[in-house]
Each structure stands twice: as C-alpha cells, then as structure tokens.
Image 1 (tube, helix red, strand yellow):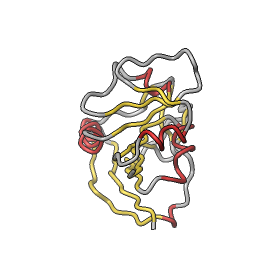
Image 2 (cartoon, one colour):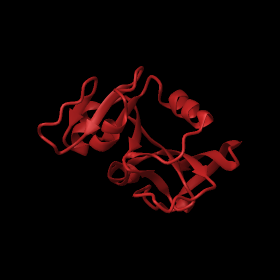
Image 3 (cartoon, helix red, strand yellow):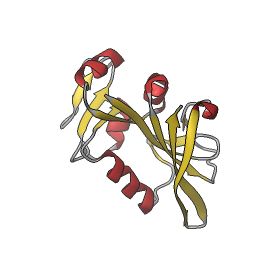
Image 4 (cartoon, helix red, strand yellow):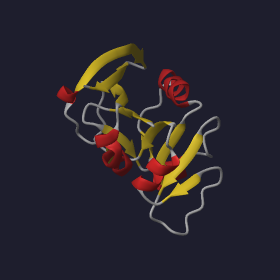
Length: 158
C-alpha cells in the first residue's frame, strides 16, 4: 500500500469551518481530482457527510466508530488496522478530517498540501502540525486566485 495525504491548508493549518472547505479554487479542485482519481480515498464520517455523494472513480472508505452509520457508495471501516488490511496493494489518499489526518500522518509517505497564503479566524478544523524537516519539499505549481496566492506542494518522507 502507498499511503498519501491530500489537503488544502491556510497559514495556520486551517482546513475547514462548519464541516466545509474554507477556500475553493478551481485549480485546486482539479489537482485533487487528478491526484486521487483511480485511487482509494479514506475519510472520516463528517468529511463524507460534507460531500454531495461518494466521489466517483475512486474507492471510498469511511472511518467511523458510529456503528449505525451507512454511507451510500462507500465502505465502512471501524479501525486503522481494518483499513490497512483492506487496502493492501492500493494507492491510498487520506482526505480528511483532522482526526483521520492525525491517525495516519505517521504512516504517510507523501503529503500533497495546497499551501494557501491566507488565514481564516473562524476555522474550526486544522491539519496536524508535522515536522517538515522529515520531508523533502517540492513545489509542484504556484497560483493566484481572487488575490490569494497558493501553491501545490509535495512533501516526501526522507
């Protein structure tokens, strides 16, 4: 299994607010789709509920402890070990939320991070802090949208 993470974060690691994304840039949505298409995506229950439906062209897995949760178009897992067992040989992307990122960060080989040069004081979900010295950093693309600079960055574990 190849384990990667993909997230768009602000200057203070802001991920979201009110169970939704803070920023939506067309270039970032295309980047997310191009990276995750054909792969397995793993997310928490709240992230799945924030989507209009299971994401097409990808194997959707929801990690939740809620025994009664049903996710149309997605598989349900109750533990990280269950995900590791189910995804042997898969290209896996962790797509959120914060607690799922925290759980899998020690195992992730690659972090595809959209670094947004902006802040959101009302953010209520944050990407976990990580030691950037443990990774090689590669700038994949740089953009400006609506006056906001952002970059697609690939962190590869050394």
